[in-house]
Image (tube, rainbow, N blue to C red; front, side, top):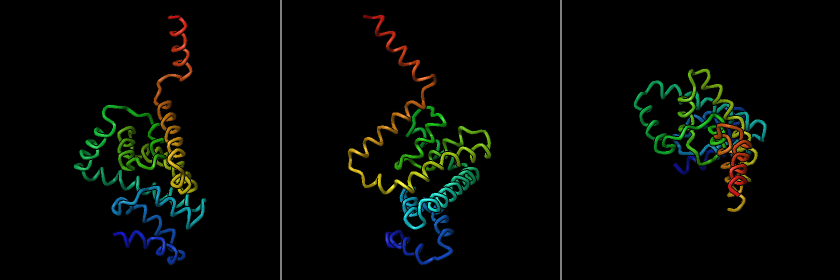
Length: 193
C-alpha cells in the first residue's frame, strides 16, 4: 500500500493529459487508500498549480460527496453506522451550516461524517449538493494553496490557527448577535457592583 501511495506523484507526472482525470479519480478512491483530503489537495497544488489544483480538487471532492450520498442511500446499514459515529463525535450537539463549513477546513475532521451531517440537515439531494459544493470551495482553495505551509508551521503557529478556527466555530453557533450577549454580560457585571 505504501508503495502505491508513494508512486502517486510519479503516476501523475507520467500521465500527461490524463493526469487531471487520474487526480480527480484519486479523490473518489481516497477513502479506500486512507489518504487525508489535505494530502491530495497539496499534491494537486504541487502538480497543477493553485488554480487547476483547486479546480480539480473541488471537482473530485464534489464527486466524492455525490457518490457518498448515493452509497448511503443505497445501503441502509451504512446509515446506522454513520449515525452511531455522529453520536460518538458530536453527542447531542446541533451544528449550524456555518459550523459544518468551518469543520470542513479542519484537516483532522472526518469528511464523510460531515457529509452525513449535511445529509441530515438538508431536505433534498439538490439542497445537499448545493451546500456540499459551497462548503468544499474554501477548503479546496485553502488546502491547495496553504496546506503545505500549514503543515510546516511550528506547533505554536498551528495552535494559533486552530484557536482562531475554534473561536469562529463557536461564534457561528451563537443563536443571537454576539454583541448582544457581550452587552448583557457587561450589564449584569455593572449592576452587581
